[in-house]
Length: 68
Image 1 (cartoon, rainbow, N blue to C red):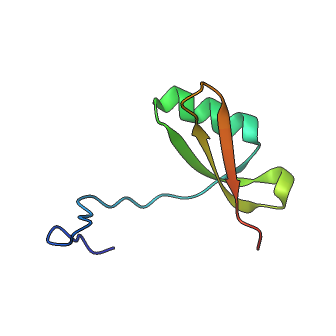
Image 2: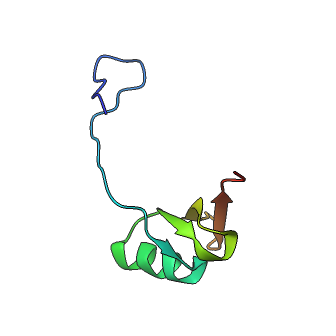
């Protein structure tokens, strides 16, 4: 992934990692253990769909699931 420091939307860091299949609950636990605001995973309950859980400002959690 190219680093785009001179762009109007600078990307200054890139990471690669394996996206593991797991439950939504496990993804939230891992996100909280890492101290992150979001976590990317493959949702077991959605047939391995690419998904993102995130911490909401109201203290709850949200999930984004790819429909493909």
